[in-house]
Image (tube, rainbow, N blue to C red):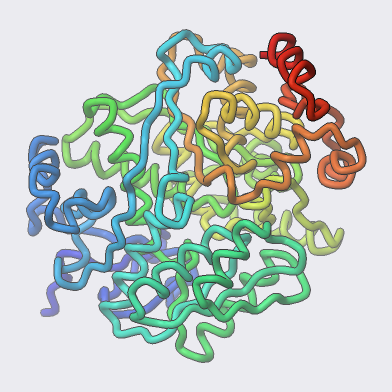
Length: 466
């Protein structure tokens, strides 16, 4: 009789449930085509009994694995041996209480926290998952790794390849669908960057084909190891809140990797007895890329114990294709029509009593400016979480006394064009960058003040505006 390893890959479909060894490089179940989880036989492992077991790692932070804000929690995703792990010090992020943003959202003082993932080495949350996927790639001896990207994944993959020299990066981007802040990282870090005619969904289809045909390791979030690393974002949130779960986690929804990872993290923590309750999850789409919102709220698509209505999803995608519908939002990091982790996100929404909303580019940029005014600048996609929290507060779903954590997924400088255009005095720049996307006003603009090169004028301006 063959014994299943203590850590293994498993199809998420209850009708299938096939398991596979960690040595296999898979992005879907070979039997049924559904997504895969990394699963654990906890009875045969040594998971932490209390949070003090985790805290003990920080006291030994001269060990690079304990210094990492991902790998110091490795006992909660023990798929790799210590000597196989690849780390560049990712996960040194900050949970910041933001009372001014709370006021904007409509929450009581002390109740809103911003989890700032822009502090990661490549400037976004992607490093949390990339270190785990890169570790698995190292375990199986990969020489090349590939991704399709709206920017942040490519920057992260290129960084890990550049720093470690363990493998070469191949990156697929769509035409005109990536900010220069992100593209510059992939180019500067030495990745082979292929720009194809099409959007992210087209790039994703091609990279899957190329990876399969050429035996290249695929690191997009359809890779189940990526999501294991992304669970660590929630572990750090809990750590910062002294292990007390908040009432709400609010996260932007693009490819739905974060929401899927967060749901898995909380379900496992509850199973292990490390938390007594699971926070509610809110996933926020941009209105120009609202597939999840449409399926969840308009077509009543639910997890349903794994028996989700595949026919409704297929019909929705067929109509998108027939209409030649393309995602369109200033929040380029979530400009995705076909989220690859949709099924896992449905499970997370079920496990976390979740809700889904969409917000406009106008709402996103206004929320972004409020985040920035507090010194925690973020890229537009990040601000979808704050804009979504405001909508949920206005609808009475979030109470003013609820403790809410909004995930800021990427750094301000990932997409500086939108920020400068929002605050500019130049109407032509505003219209060309923002007006074409339906943004009508810069509600909270902080415009530069033009003054003569004259001491009296400068003093007068400071007294008037300062």
